[in-house]
Amino acid sequence: QEQESSKTKLPESSSSSSAGLELLCVVRALLKKIKRRVMVGDKVLVGSIDWVDRRGMIENVFQRDNEILDPPVANVDQLLVLFSLDQPKVEPFLLTRFLVEAESTGIPLTLALNKIELVDGEAVSSWKARLRSWGYEPIFCSVETGHGLDLLAFKLRDQTTVIVGPSGVGKSSLINALRSNPRVCDSLVWFEPILGSKWFEDQRVGEVSTRSGRGKHTTRHVSLLPLSGGGYLADTPGFNQPSLLKVTKQSLAQTFPEIRRTVSANEPAKCSFNDCLHLGEPGCIMKGDWERYSYYIQLLDEIRIREEFQLRTF
Ligand code: GDP
Image (cartoon, rainbow, N blue to C red; front, side, top):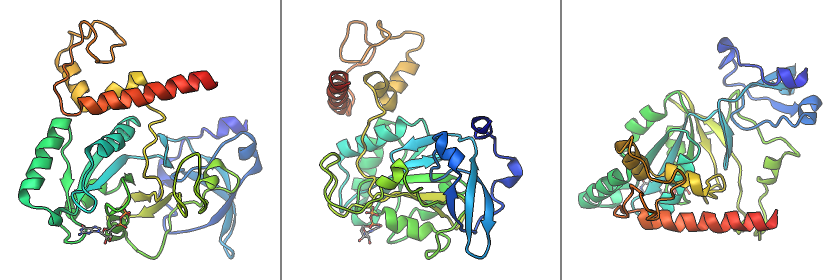
């Protein structure tokens, strides 16, 4: 019965009725028993509310539209991949990794390039043309001067957006510029990760992890911050290394718009093999004449090695 009710759909009318209220909650034991995890971004039913101490109990988790795991957020409308044109400069392969990870979720993505005031017009035009050939129309912006922030705010309005990108590109600065109130972190759907959950482990500030290779004092946590124009932006410090763990050899091609475009432009003519990896197999309709072809091969190789290792270990 409990399992059944945990799949409850959220009633339309209750979606934002308690915005602005912050409660410290524990999760009902039964939910833990059926391994029903609460994630940042979840819409939940809160009961047993103590209004004086501002505490409550999560009685139920409403059905999710979607979830991403790295960073862990539920009910995401879009991903914002943020890089900077300078300090640090765009590294095309690193940008490709972020784009592949974002594309693999199936959630719409927006690409923005920050710090536009640090480069000249020629560099901007050149990146625009280059990224268009990859299949993207980036927003160029500067948190410093405010350039492009109106457009970004418009894109983010009334959406739950997860911002990702390497450190130093201006993610925190952008969040601060777009937040409704820089001091308060309050919303119905913002929760501290629940003690004892897998995600709480991710929150520790600590020594170098030999497994992940992340540096000392790396804090990994997610919080959902209300935006002044409506909607939420997930702050995800520490999640700046795309793991690509969800991407398989077969699904990688789907994360490159260049391949998707060529394949759909040639429909119904397809590659001869259904499981074609576009590596020059006989009858393959992809030629290796696109800029990111070498990145595609490199990622395919990385995923192949990981998959072979997993096969040997498990
Ligand atoms: P994060 O690591 O991605 O969260 O990056 P931060 O928001 O901490 O920003 C890193 C540095 O870039 C800080 O010194 C910011 O002041 C600076 N910064 C952010 N946006 C801009 C911008 O548009 N132009 C310039 N010149 N610096 C910026």
